[in-house]
Length: 168
Image (cartoon, rainbow, N blue to C red; front, top):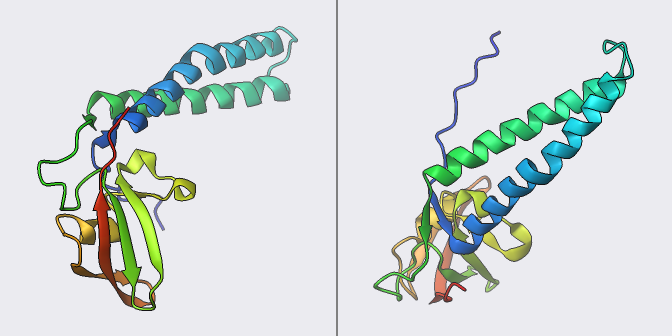
């Protein structure tokens, strides 16, 4: 058995203005606040002597590696990111940034916003544009019917509303 794992293709490079701002704020916090705090803690732990059995030192170094890994990831994502700040030319169709209301076969309605893969937030009903449901909804209009393959089979939805909100 090998440890090799096929790397997943990177997600789409789109983000809303709000999503890009949140990623920049996270990067800034990690680099200017959290990393200096952890670095100071590691220096203090290193000053205590034997590093091989110093739990604070070992844990601090691990935290630094995790912070550096996240900082590298955020910088790469932000460098190649396309920030979408305006609605599409045809607001009657579903595109990136749309709020979409769908109804299933049983009459249950769900509303969601299609956003970039870095902005997924189930609590706010933000769905990645790379998800099967969002891909099925793209370029559709109100009253269009879409079928999505889910683990339990396939589900059919009807689009009942498409709207775009202006970015702040």
